[in-house]
Image (cartoon, rainbow, N blue to C red; front, side, top):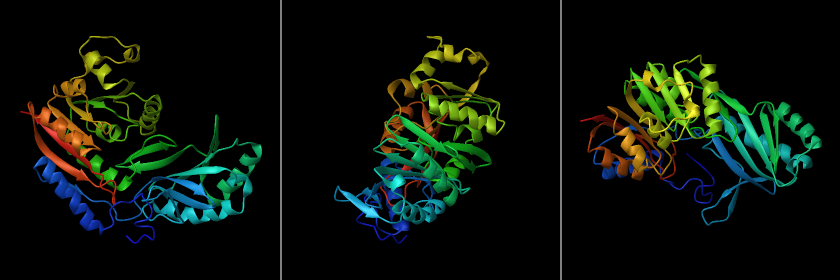
Amino acid sequence: MNCAYFGVCGSCTEFSSYEDQLQKKVVKFQELFGIEPEIFASKPQHFRARAEFRYIDGSYGMHSVDGGVAKIEECPIVLEPIFALMPKLRAYLATNETLSYKLFRLDFLSSTLGDTLVSLIYHRPIDEVWEEQARRLAKELGISIVGRSRGKKNVIGKEYVEEEIAGIRYYHYEGSFTQPNPFVNAKMIAWAKEAKVEGDLLELYCGSGNFTLPLAKDCRKVLATEVSKTAIKAAKLNASLNNIKNVAFVRLSAEEVSEALAKKRAFRRLKDVDLDSFNFEAVFVDPPRCGLDDATRELVAKFKKIIYISCNPLTLHRDIQQLQRTHRIQKAALFDQFPYTSHIESGAVLVRR
């Protein structure tokens, strides 16, 4: 990938060819785990579905390698709809004082379907005059806009983009977590489905149903849990959108799930869920960078099969070291969600010894 800002913009930190920097990740994975993973590469450019930029003197800004802010005009790692939109939006803002005045940040969210949303975040109140100008901008550029200032949110169009991956339709909401690389995400979902869970599945950290819904098609029943109210709401909507009815989404932490399954505590949030009707064959986890805590590792160790997606190979390695007392690694994978960085997304399927 050719980028005029390599070595200046701090978003990318690996500047060798894509093939070389991917190989560095593979070697790092092999040294850490002592096994050879399946490798799932990314597109070398136009792979990122969401991006955040500062707005500085009519230019986009990113943190720079020297700790300051680098002014940029384009970013070749973003999806093509965002890449094409960036110069048009910058030119429009340069001639519109209402929309550019005290504009602090711009967040882009797009999809492989071409649906695009831009969040404009201000260090000033937004009002009816702003809304009138934002509606004109949205119509001219064919996008949705969310305006934000302190205590104020104004939606022009939709507050989500539509996406389709693995035959599942998703609404990805502004401000909520979504997998940043939709092409690698599709490979992650396909890899997880190959684990062949045909009975009942417990999922922890389910988010808005990214893995839940495609996996549910192969399962009898799924109990999917997550602590975020917003994510659970989006997951239920996405399930309804795809007419998937064999999933119970519940707002519970991993610790609360453990207490509920052990019947140590009753939860009103489970009043419509018959836990005794589940015969869990496997557990799926996609935890934050800190990995699994002690209680959650103890919980997942009770399952015959563990499907583990990780955004931090160090905590994955730590967790696997402990889980290998009861389970063995059946397969492992490296998913290159973040080209041109040292970040490694990985996965492992463990089965009981």
